[in-house]
Image 1 (tube, rainbow, N blue to C red):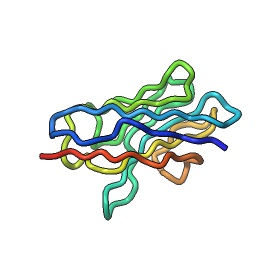
Image 2: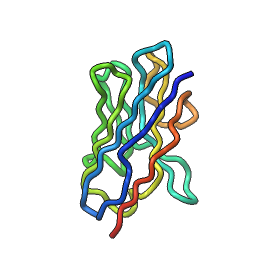
Image 3: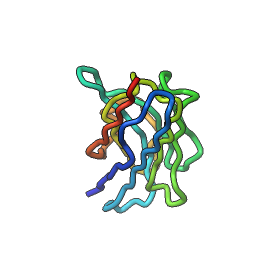
Image 4: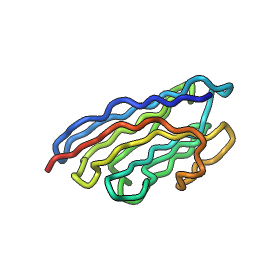
Length: 125
């Protein structure tokens, strides 16, 4: 059973930065297509960023383009999300998600098989 563990959330002032990390373990694959989603209270889960299992292609939601950067480690079973120029509207629980090797990045949350438990990001104004 694949497990995803997120870290790096917290409280930051508007304009500040945070870095989230996610590590996958327990599966038979060593590489995954990985993504970050977020969900604010009363809102649907939103695609933030995704990176292909090869590490070549990355994609971003419109609201974070130019501010957030997704990357993965050499082993392709980790994904980091560097978040700069944070805004209060970025406040949400951020979830790491993964799909098996060979599957492409998708923006719909139901396309992802594995999920982390989430980490809270709060941006104060």
